[in-house]
Image 1: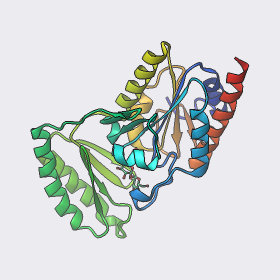
Image 2: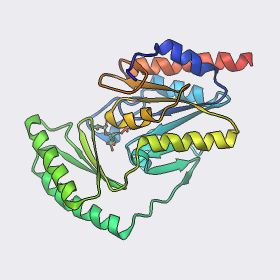
Image 3: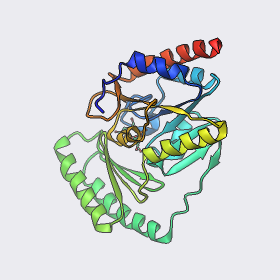
Image 4: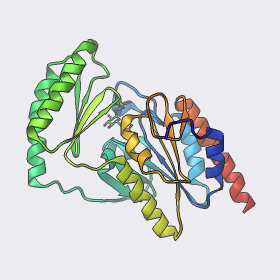
Length: 267
Ligand SMILES: O=P(O)(O)OC[C@H]1O[C@H](O[C@H]2O[C@H](CO)[C@@H](O)[C@H](O)[C@H]2O)[C@H](O)[C@@H](O)[C@@H]1O
């Protein structure tokens, strides 16, 4: 479904009135501006305020669903023990402080080691490229590479190396190509969170999912009638609504909080 099929205001209005709502948020590029150093990312102040407000409304849950490692996501979102976090594109899960064990097999570890050796050499050959070590894979970052003509050949060589080792899921994001030894995605994460909350609450849970990148399409793809997918920024998408940028999405979250607070008071 093309973005723009639903006017943002109309979509938010509908979500304000559902009895149970999961607000599932991508992190980088959706609530946190993209920066050169991933460790320096921060949630935009207005977005944080809206998230805190939403968390305080009855029948409303906020989760982060990110490609980031869980530890990084927990730190940057300053999540407490009640947090719902899905990291590493759906592989790592933390539900209110309970972290599902990853337990990589010896074979997975071996493939990781072999890919790391290959990627380390490739990344070292391109000035200012950076290799991110993740719990179930690697990210080849190229945001800071000055000579961007070096990026396509680096990414092609990295893909070739991953194909050579075998068994990796490849994802292309913003100035990054990533390789994961586990084939799980953000859609799996959203499905799991919805089922968990519906089970706990004994009723259906509508979902607002927002994301800015290609990897968020897996999450948009599992949304159901009554949910709302919001694409943040440009690019082809299956999301039914679109906002221009992080400030516009921050405004959407604040509007949702205000309308949901008003709706809860009426019931
Ligand atoms: O699913 P997300 O929450 O959007 O995470 C995707 C990747 O985000 C990080 O990289 C991106 O953000 C960095 C900081 O702004 C930026 O420097 C980089 O160019 C982006 O690709 C993170 O480092 C990755 O692990 C995530 O997979």
